[in-house]
Image 1 (cartoon, one colour):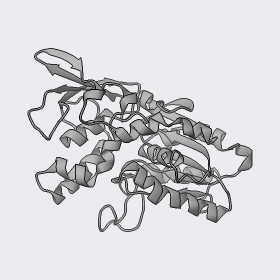
Image 2 (cartoon, one colour; image 1 turned 120 degrees about the horizontal axis):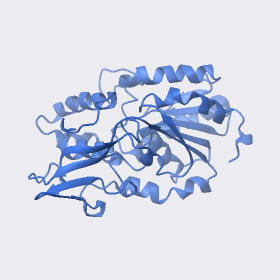
Image 3 (cartoon, rainbow, N blue to C red; image 1 turned 135 degrees about the vertical axis):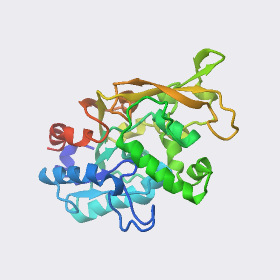
Image 4 (tube, rainbow, N blue to C red; image 1 turned 135 degrees about the horizontal axis):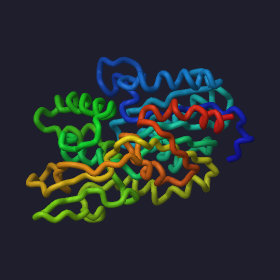
Length: 316
């Protein structure tokens, strides 16, 4: 749809993994808010307010239960948030500003059968549109081994804190707890679009494990990427912003696993890193989706406020 139809479309902001918190996720944390990520997101909300989008008037936050599969979050959380924005402002359209996993939730909505023809722009920041190898390490092994040499970051801190909490539900069975209570983590693992990413060393020889032969496959992201053309068909303008200049895990080094239910495609023992990413997501993964592409030298969390000039240009 053309932007002239909605000169002041409200914004719905979709935060990333760990960017929503409430009693639904961890009892005792209260009503919906940014939780762990408040120090990253609250300044950005204030920035948007200064740009003419006051919270709950022209700016709305789509909090969601990031443990659930991405398509469920899109229907149960994002869709109602968009409806609230439209009802409050009277606008038939919204602009979605999405960070990290939030971009996948937004894609799940705009590519779905329940899409309401109400999104003008889709602005995606640091979203792993082809997945992230780090997610394999957590899904298959329950941790990111210390031998992996990328610099530790705040997202990893959030992950370790939450997984320690989650393990209390099934003591000494972290993998089972993750698979039962955190299924969306599988939706973040690399898809076919990422390419082969496990470099296995077996009897002194290193070779990539073919994605098609792996047990851990991101079938939902494979589906989203196979059907991404529907976004353009629905006349939604897509802008992709990737962070670069920070050491990011590109490939994982593995060895064969001796466990039948842990590290099923290889035990992670190291990584090959690149500065063509934001410390969490490789730029090529962000750009696996079709759209206008921009690079920003920033970390995974810095990218939002470091993109202020671009945001002003896109939203004017």
